[in-house]
Image: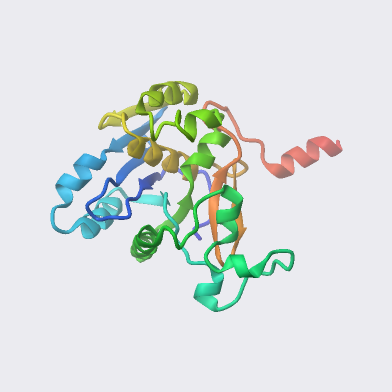
Length: 247
């Protein structure tokens, strides 16, 4: 993994569809002076411009944005049992139930990796192609990130969640306060795919001290923010917090 640091480089978020003809959306956070810019590339635009080579177009599009990190809403690894023939070191777990799920799936409350078979396959493909370009591909789970950013769970999941009720999206954007901290450009941020792409980008833009990785390192991990970090003058590093407590 690329060493984590505060950087002026761009980061990209990808809400990946399991189908090449599906609704994949991108968002890029770019340094543009006093305020960083969030640029949305809609699912409609990507599908229209991808033509007969959607996978190749997506890889070229991401590479052309020159990001240092790419956050992807899709499983990027297989359960350890399927890739290595053994289970992660968790003697307290029922191993019979672990062949189709990763530890990170259990932590975030996501679906079984294998139930998302086509999406998982496409996520692994995309991450490998990205890493060939010396970019860091990171798995993200936008629903959990939104919770960490302070969005009420009822706005995220269920019948009133934004995926079933897109009219909820303006309230989520208002709660996040993005327009106060970022210059919002690109395509309209009106759909759930575009929102998920933005959340993926925000997650991998988190500076040191504002994120964690969950899951087994050998099996595959998901990056989660610890809190909403934009609009804060400076992040307190964990060692600083310990020092102030001991003083």
